[in-house]
Length: 210
Image (cartoon, rainbow, N blue to C red):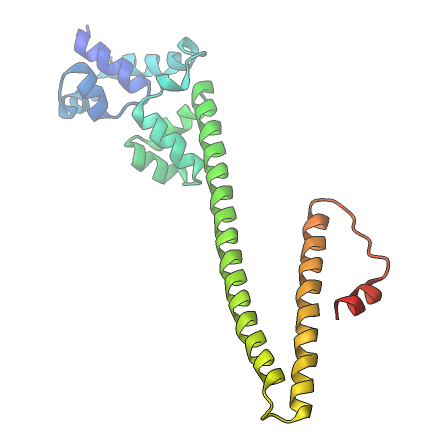
């Protein structure tokens, strides 16, 4: 007949706990739990408890998951294979596969996957915003330097008239291109969101910008 400590260990192991966690629950070492698991009576009790565990706790909340199960759920949500998940949780592959059949574990796994997806989207958005801001800052700096040089060329009496006129034309063209680029970018963003944008007279708009 199993002792009270052994029964406690059986319940812990059936819920997916490791030998060390089951030992802590029973007040013994993980070595003792390992020895118990070699006993035929203990094995039979453990098998019965494992088979009954999902049926006995169908409405458990995520708070009822063991630390090992929470680790496994997060690892699976991050796309790790069963082998690595089992190593991280300190359990066997068979145990992880059994956990995946539990409603409470599936609920936690779903929440974990949602959290991972949300975090991934936020990272992507932050990266895009950061890259976009860096790009805008660099373009703005380049435009400022270029326009400054053009203005200097346009007002420098030591330069020939042809060069000064060319500088003025370039300045006007760049200004127009800048606004046309912004318009096209805005149209592209709207169309990505499902809107259809129609510009009736693109050439006229382009001429106005130039």
